[in-house]
Image 1 (cartoon, helix red, strand yellow):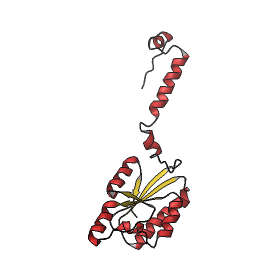
Image 2 (cartoon, rainbow, N blue to C red; image 1 turned 120 degrees about the vertical axis):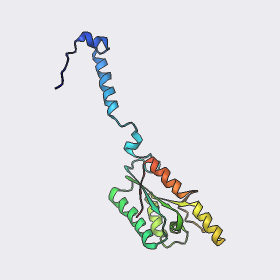
Image 3 (cartoon, rainbow, N blue to C red; image 1 turned 180 degrees about the horizontal axis):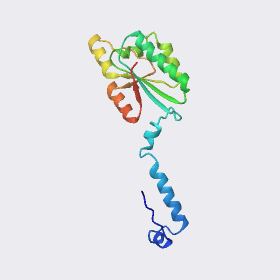
Image 4 (tube, one colour; image 1 turned 30 degrees about the horizontal axis):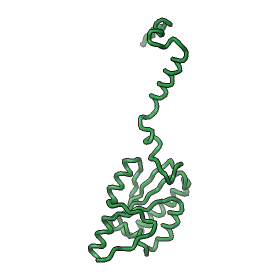
Length: 169
């Protein structure tokens, strides 16, 4: 059972809360204390290209299987339809055999172009591209929409730390 002590104006005056404006300040401080400590985490990462995005998704593709590639592209398209292109920020990160999706001559280029037109970003791992060049003697030509990063997995980790959710279909 809790016991409440009456607060007289002399007690309140001693702690600086005798005037009504002090009560307003105290109330504002209590409200501020109830807010999350990391506002960016509560709202998601900041996105210059999608300022109204409420959802932040990273689709990981490390497989050359055409069915997996089709699944990733379909998932991105379905999410854009569900949330609307302004309310979801989608990035497809390719590394390992998955980089083939972003070769200039890949059969899925029309789908990639359509998704890019709706704001989806496609990232390619340059370590993988460098490895392909060393082993084949020829650097593959990439889609003009491919955003290069040196280390694909490091990029995934950085995005997760920013608040993106990773899905690997």
